[in-house]
Image 1 (cartoon, rainbow, N blue to C red):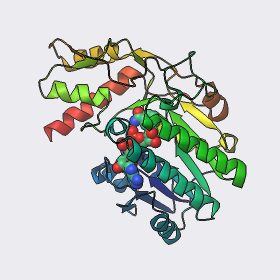
Image 2: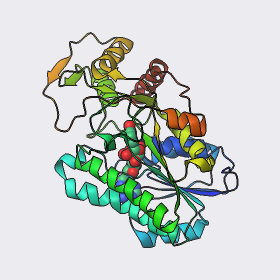
Image 3: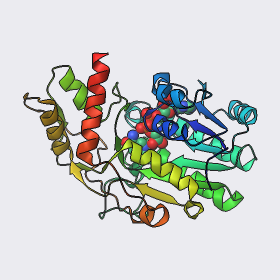
Image 4: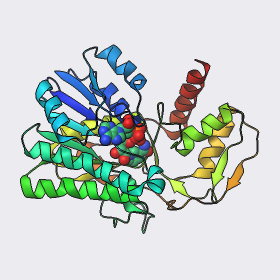
Length: 321
Ligand SMILES: NC(=O)c1ccc[n+]([C@@H]2O[C@H](COP(=O)([O-])OP(=O)(O)OC[C@H]3O[C@@H](n4cnc5c(N)ncnc54)[C@H](O)[C@@H]3O)[C@@H](O)[C@H]2O)c1
């Protein structure tokens, strides 16, 4: 395998993880590199770095769930491979559950249909550790029961099952990347922000950090470029086809520790504000990454502390601009 001379489309490529995959793809010697994003959360600024490496990058502000639009784009660029990261994020599913479910499943369904209809060859679909819910045993491997705590998680479970079912029924050539929590530059820090960008932003704004619930809830954090590299490795390994692979650090860290480390690195002395636990908040998350080690030789290359420094520095630089 190998992506050299292929034409690759990234759905949701102007978002956080998607734009880091686009960066990685920009140096793979591709025939063409196409990004489709409806800019619900993504930003064309996130593509600047990739464009400097691959000026022929083409961007479409379109809905990736629209079959006609996607077929046209695929035909125009002779697309071979699709990385699917288009998603409406979890917090939106608290206020618009039906819409979030329909949007997220709609994109996956369209991409499955187009692949089996011959519009392109290989789908690398992004799942989420949210499919597991609160861990029933740890570390969580890919056999862990699926128990969506939110309509967002239900949309991710349904999407994964669609990919598997199209593989079994129609021989879809697909692999599933199942990340745990990612962090790094360009993570959305707006209304749907995750704890790391939210805390950095609060401290930059001279506000105190906030912990929801006890702070003892844990997450397994991976620096985003390690996830981007793993997605390319998953494409390159045929052994991953028809499988979902956990992609994570394999280490657990509490939210209180994460916030403590950010405060310390940023020199914040304001006491942490406590807020009530949020509905559907998963208590423990830690991945078993044995399958990814076995199939693609996966090994995180950026430590949590180093990743945190790079992330804070990026947000500080951006704030100065
Ligand atoms: N960020 C994490 O920690 C994390 C963890 C586990 C899994 N994931 C998964 O990784 C993938 C990417 O997540 P992210 O954090 O980069 O999210 P993100 O919100 O930063 O990026 C998603 C992108 O999809 C775009 N989008 C949404 N609906 C679309 C549609 N219908 N058509 C075209 N574009 C659309 C958005 O504008 C955005 O740019 C998702 O599948 C998500 O479930 C992320």
